[in-house]
Image (spheres, rainbow, N blue to C red):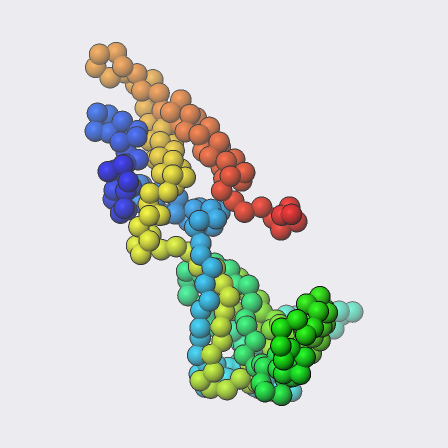
Length: 281
């Protein structure tokens, strides 16, 4: 199919681009499966269409609260990991203990990045009947055109600054290879059953979103990967002549595929990859 919608259809499409079934593509099925996984990983990590922004909810349990607790004398308290290092200083052996909190959530493997955790406790500035925001609407905006919009906007900005200073965003740390969302705040301020809303980026699972297999970049990239593997497999047969005088040249096939991959990766940086924030403007 010209529009592959499954993993196998994508493989068949790439093989046809290389000459199958007219030519025999000397690449094993296991090698092709590995290349598909590599292509999807590169697509998810670098292509702006490879991920989606999500707001995931997580309900806190008692186990989460217990793990986050720490005492004044580590490592007695639960949720504390101890690492010990030894050294000799001035002829005397010394031991150094380093403590790390276990205040983290194990996020799904599909999450590749976390932006922030939304505040789960509302401030008195922007919520409730007795909040400043409510009183501003009640007393100053009793009918339209009663207040200048510029003044209202300036007051709102000022209140937001106060809110940010009094209740700053929660400090978090996240590493994709750990799949752990560390929360550097007192999680006991929330209760069991409360929800955390996580602003994150999640990969597009091609099983659920089959149009991923039809992405133009992915098809071109996987075709070049299979072509390079084909050349890699044929390099050892260089100089071997087939019946009819045909001579295999795996090195040329490999180098040609490598040039294509270099061009594709260059176009990834210029056409498909989001630029660094410093260059957005």
